[in-house]
Each structure stands twice: as C-alpha cells, then as structure tokens.
Image (cartoon, rainbow, N blue to C red; front, side, top):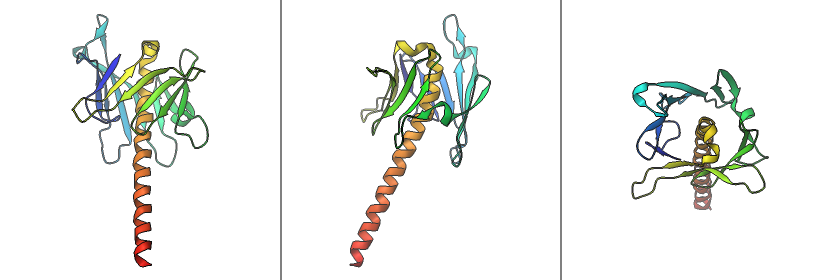
Amino acid sequence: MELVLSHNSPTNTELSTSDGRVLYSISTPNKWTGRTTKLFKYNLSNGGFNPAGGSHELARIHWHSWRHSQLIYDGQMIDFDSFLHTTRMLSNSRAFVGPDGKSYKWTTTWRSCHLVVDEKNGATVADLKQKNLLGTKAVLEVDAAVLHMLDLVVITWIYFEKKRREDQTNQASAAASAAAASSAAAATC
C-alpha cells in the first residue's frame, strides 16, 4: 500500500491512497512550539475509507525536549522512549514489538527511513520514498504483511521521521559551527 504525503512533513500532512482517498490526517497546530501532534483516522464505510463519514482522533503525541515524549493511544498514555526504544547505544534505530509479537525496527539513511522485521533476514515492511525534483510527492510504502497494524506503523513513523529530521538538522548545524570556528581560528593565525 502506498500512502502519499500531501506535505513533506511527518507532523503536518495527510496520508492518502494512490487514488486520492485520505486515510490519515496529521496536524501539529502550533508550528513554532510544536508541542502536540494529533493523528486522525478517517472512518471506514462499506469496507473503504469515507471522509464524508468523519474521522476520529487515533493518537496524540506530546513532544518534550527535556523529558521523554508521550503517546496517547488506545486509551493509554505511553512513554515513547520505552515503547519505541533505541536498539543500542549511539544508534539512531528504534524498535518496538507489534501486536503480532514480532519485533520491528525503524532504521535510517541520510534521506529516508525504513521499517524492518527485526529477524535474521530483516525484511523491509515500510519504506519512505522522499519527494524528488520532478515534483513527485513523498510516499510511505507499506507492505501487505503489516497492514494489520497500519495505525501503529503510521504512529511510529511520525515519531521516528520527526526525530530523524531533527538529528539531521542538528548534525548540519554542528558541522556549520565547526567549519565557522575553524575558519575563524585560521583567520587569526
């Protein structure tokens, strides 16, 4: 299944099928502080999604800088760092156990992220394809093997992709600061 992003943002976008039916709406109303992200799911009607049938709030993510972010999902408040935990020290990967009892792991590359079944073969079950220069929108490709937990794939993707982009921005800022400091030091010599 392909979920097409309406905007290139994991916290402010709609996820639609390739034929244009909106399945999820993700909004973080205050773009400056971005403290709470709400995920809405469009209701099912006659075996398909029907935006006219309304939507309901599926989950909420409360982002925190100095403590663990929290997820409100299925009537529970969950510490995101406990639920979607790092796989090893100094790793960007994050893992969780799905409702099927299998372990899943989000991994990252410089431009994208992938969800793999954390088994020996590590089969990719979700993959973010970034938008390109020709105007093709970003797409979250989800394998049929995990459609039974699509809500969980989307929730964990929102968290992981936001963190991945923040890390990428922080690394670029650190590199720019180091380059500026190096240039300043060279200029004083």
